Image (cartoon, rainbow, N blue to C red; front, side, top):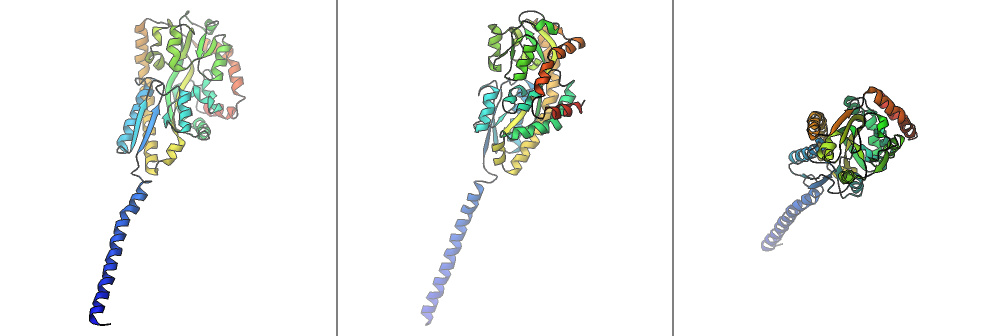
Length: 346
């Protein structure tokens, strides 16, 4: 090989090497980009729908959850809040979570027996003696049992929120003892045990969605209803009801739910952030809910609604009259285990 040919050969070899290096470098970012499409840079949106007013502790907690998630993920997760039944009733929202069109909800426990039968436990009269027992039970063994059942329905529990103890209102006459409920037509949620409770008291038990309740009370489709003070005030039921009974006969909790399918698609670091924010907001919501009670009572006293209260004897009578509700619940799988878990917290 003469010198000229040899030089040309070496030139071509060098040119090929440079070409391969350039091609390799140009492919490297593409490979990184492909990996990044399923990596930590992906954007996520959570539609968080619920049925109560934004002014309640539950409504404010939903807003706080959204703010903290967006802040701590640097906007990688966006949270859209839809209060006041904008996207449907609790059951409809939860069904949409299962189908994937909504990612979060904080439904009240009375609607969840449609998905997990064991949630009927929250509809038992005088189940929790105070909020401490309620909190410890829901964040303890009872919560563990229920959370496992929820996961089988594609729903992941991030914690439990406080709704408060339920009281009666009506537009007919003062209810100063359980006997005074006799003959009233009271609204119940969709829970079978709540309907059974009112039937045991000879007080109707008509199932009406929460979003339609004000109108039902106004038109006297029903005489009265049961709810915590937060809902009675935020929905202004006192405008269409004349009598309030501080009975504390039942407890209303909320379950902070996220679609498990959506949660599992999040990268581990974002899952951790969701868990941490939920835990922080859970504690904040319970404190806010308790502090709001005094404010709600002031509003009701100023409204002119006539207020009465059950004493301990009335509560015992109520339990006697609704004994069949406990018997009915004991037919549910795992009922005794759950009741024992609550008893251990007392």
